[in-house]
Image (tube, rainbow, N blue to C red):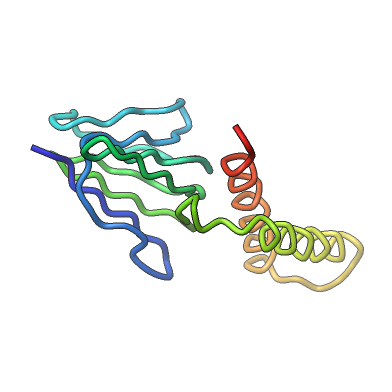
Amino acid sequence: MPLTLDIVTPAKKVFTGTADSVVLPTQSGLVDILPGHIPLTTLLVPGEVVVTSGGTVERLVVDKGFARVLGDTVSILTEAAIDTDDIDLDAVEKAEKRAAAALEAAKNGARLDAAEVDRMEQILRFSAAQKLIKRPR
């Protein structure tokens, strides 16, 4: 029996499907989930989720979040997620530069509220994860 995988961000459901296995980037390292896995709730770190189904491999980049494995269902709640094929490195670089500039301005006295600082830090984390995953292998 295959796994059911759902990846959800605050903005939308990014992925819904079945898989033979799912590899998660957790605080403790990579965790490979197969059908029949014991129940698990874990913190995710920015990195790559590898979904294998019928011999095909799909890769998605996720930001920090949570994963829950219950029965043969894997649920991922994350700040952001994108299919590696959809990563535009030029757009990533531009977003990273804007976020870094905003954080630098905040350090130099510009007024940014705590939520905006968190958002800029999230952009930098997610950008770094995308660049690491998308780099030539």
